[in-house]
Amino acid sequence: MSTVTGPTASTHDHGTRAHPDVAPGEIAVGVVVGRASEYFDFFVYGIASALVFPAVFFPFMDRLEGTLYSFAIFALAFVARPLGTILFMSVHARWGRGAKLTSALFLLGTATAGMAFLPGYATLGTTAIVLLALFRVLQGIALGGSWDGLPSLLALHAPKERRGWYAMLGQLGAPVGFIVAASVFAFLYASLEERDFLAWGWRYPFYVAFAINVVALFARLRIVVAEEYQGRMGELELEPTPVGELFRAKGQHVVIGAFAALASYALFHIVTIFPLSWILLFSEQSIVDFLLVQILGGFVAAGGIVASGLIADRVGRARTLGGLAIVIAMFSGFAPTLMEGGKIGQDAFILIGFALLGLSYGQAAGAVTANFGRRYRYTGAALTSDLAWLIGAAFAPLVALGLCAYFGLAWLGAYLLSGAIGTLAALGINRARNFKS
Image 1: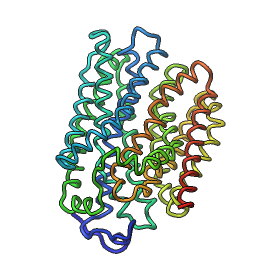
Image 2: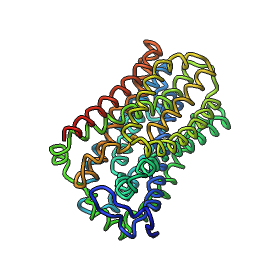
Image 3: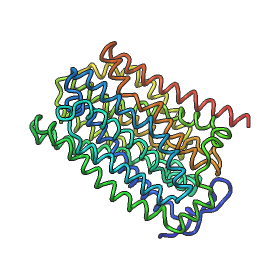
Image 4: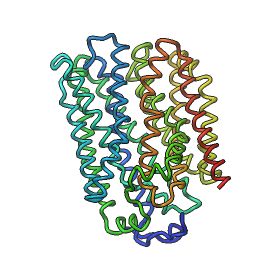
């Protein structure tokens, strides 16, 4: 393990000093690797929900209705995720962090591989849909259980003047996971006939996801079970706390934290999953070309995430998040026009949307987690993230596609605006509460 020297050993929250054997850079590597693997799984399923599952599991419906049902199953993982967090916190309390992470990622890999081998509706009928929903629920439970506390450990060891920079590092896993997942699907979609792609080609990304999970597991275990990290997490009380006690003591902060990230999380699926379904259903644009634009958008988002760290260290994380919420609110006003503007307008929507996503998402995680203090930070940060995903992102593709298909694209702007309002309201409440205290 590397050693912290110079400025990385500066005083952090609660007046403690960085542990001499705990390096923020090494923690950051574990965070990025772990998040990238999770997001790859995440986007493989999401892209398949738009491009594959309506035809494979809902062929008895028209394509729009089949996609809506596919997006309903997509949302199940986010509903199950808080349950997974609670369940695996119990595993952690009884058997330790290593056992928790190993069992959670084993479950995630099993559920993902199960989807890869799952026959479609033509073979199993309704049973295929039930099994797909079951595997999706298991994915959500596993994702909830995969919380390792490394982002919190990183935040508590980051120099005070660099907290925005270190906060954004873990968020880079999202664009990395999306770029790889979209690239795999673009290659398969371009290389295979549609019949072959729907019969067997779509299964390969799920096999890859299983392999990546195995690699990521060992990369993360190397850190979380190391003696110096285990000891430091114990010193900082980054351990599970009873959920009932957490909500009695800090429940309001869980809710405020979830809504503080709402603008970013609402935008998340509006520029990644929803547009794929819209292009397939209502546009003449090539899916491969559109995926390539989204891949470019992923790189733009990665640049935005890096920039968010620099901006946040100058003006503060909450101000960065609030300022981007205002910009997203402005973007919501012309987003419908762009989506109606043909290829040029749709591509502009994607690139602008990804830029705003990167800038806002880079500081969306943990902007108000300092409110939890030491005792409740580990469990509080996990459940805050779960709730943010559930409120802001879980039903975004389903709601956006349904409203826009039946009532017009103006509802796309309304959805984004609601997320921006939620963020600004939560940040305002948080600031008022801190001012009074």
